[in-house]
Image 1 (spheres, helix red, strand yellow):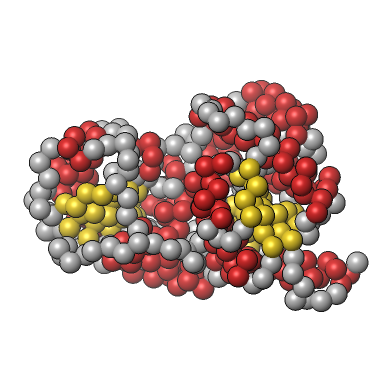
Image 2: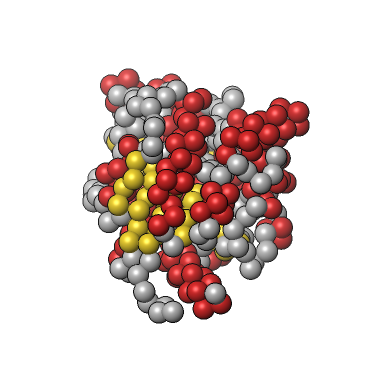
Length: 392
């Protein structure tokens, strides 16, 4: 078989930014290499997917409006139906881990599957950690074995999974190759993920097209604050940030999203610069401190640029991410409850004035930059497809 022949690659994801965004660069790389990529997702992602050069395929039978509690299961079902309808014409299926039926449906179509992890690589032990530390409902149920068992049996029947246990399905019905958007040094329980099957490729910073940003009115050090969609609805929280740094010798870049208006935040000091959106990678290259909610994409990007962190988690995997950051001396874990401007200010001073934080980050920055990102994933997937053809 010709190693350089053009492939038909199918990608599928659920419509959540933290899970889809890092994979867009992978679609772009395959297209740039001359392969045909189709990407299944919700209609909201059409424009961003088409910018990669991939063909967008909308979910079959997907409602226009869904409550947050409905979104995951309905998108699972819609994605599952769509992959079954179109997937047989492709050389492989690439899916992100939140689409749990990915391996099962690829097996049904008799095509190879490859899995992407936008959080840590997952097994039962990691999932239990997420549940114990306050994770989202899909992981919180690991605190309740009976509830977990009932839910697992229901989705097994609905999606044709091999095992009647979520963790078992994720761990035992796994593709031969799994790719995680962090480095092995940051993974929790890394020894439980064999190197032959789990590849840690670092953050997906490749090919990110960001707008220009004007730093001309700012002085060092720069403190960058971006806290995700849940905290971005709290004007009170942003006022705490403004009060914390009002008289500090720093420049603060505060990204507040589209929900809060600048007028709600009171008097803005000259050293604080407020935006609804910023080019995060450009900011992290210049920032001396990143105050973040602990989303894995943002954390991995901070590791790539060697930026120490204060992490204020909200939910999902974020409390466990925050604990890992603190355990590895890459930043500090701050609880939202009882957080005051004075606490925020003092913790920021602690990190900014102690060079050991950035010294510790040097190893993680080096490993992140060497890990290969989406380019490494594309290379390994294409090599595996060629190997399978040679052995057939």
